[in-house]
Length: 504
Image (cartoon, rainbow, N blue to C red):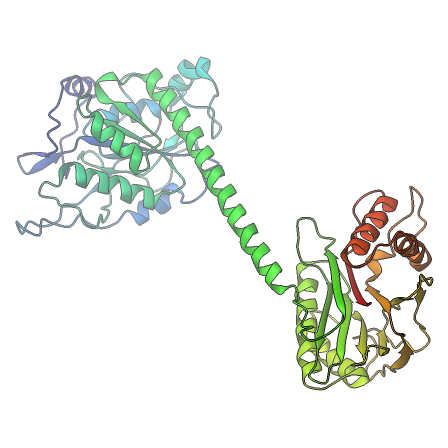
């Protein structure tokens, strides 16, 4: 583990770096000091975000733990900084473990300890963080760096004694001679400290295995000290920064995909599963939310069969199209199912749902329309309640023309009129029939390029034509939805839910 090593000038530093070093996996201890075979250049880019230089300095406080076997005390890790690429190159040949070169800032950072003046071979800034872009800007960048206008200083854990610094705690590192394992622990600690920064590993030419291992651990690139020059360093920095950007973009894409998959699983889980065991009725439904790439919208539906053989069906629509409306729709659907199994129906059930809506909605402007149907156990009659919702469509046997159920007994939408009442209308269905329940998104699409709405009459024409072709069940719903979408000239803007019950 490196501790204080007297700083040398750039010439002697490069001379020492040009001499091949031993790579037997051990640290060389001389006069109580340890020389490291691994140097890390940590580059902060303007697009990387995360910690600022002063914050990283604050986070790098502490001591390296001592050798548990030898009983030696922990060695303090000092902070080294580079004001520009020229100085970074000099420090990289000076037994330094880690330098943070900040490409995003252009002035000295208050409280950051800088290293020696810029010396050694000139480096070239990459085209990030306001630095000159392109290889042709290398000389201009190096000159600007020498004048103090290059990339600003960063923070580093260092072996050199020049400049004061703060320590950093590296758990599990053996200061008595952990060698390559300890050096890779330093790299892992740096990656944890600055997960959004590009890292270049610098090793001796004879230690290619350590360099490759550093890249496997997480560094973006590696260089050999004896091959270091300004142009190579500039290229390596550009490559490391761009690779880190690509890695971060891929990570964000993967995280977004996982979140989308999780949201999709959640939304699919919130869609209803009809409970019609023991019923002779056939069920089909289609659902298309208006929100792009969503699986759940403000429309909701459900169908259950109670112990007495009655089949209860419901369809509703919460005003609005966002995720809050979708969540409220799920709450109302679950409440409807629970109340139905508890024996409530008609006006009593709708009144209770209105109280649920009043307590759960985000504002008083939010309301919900609802249609409930209770089909008798013999399947020949039904009770219908409407709360500001479009009337269902029913078609009898023998090719009779579909018709809307009477709308005369409709009550207000839920959440509009306090203490409202919703009358229940009894209708005869006959021996064989099809009952279509839908939300207004199905009938509010346009016809052609004009502003004319499809309306209930247009929907009746579509359903009549498709039933005349012998369609029923899911085929009828798919064809109806496709016809409405085609007449609209594309996808519908509103949520659409359609529920079909057949008795054949």
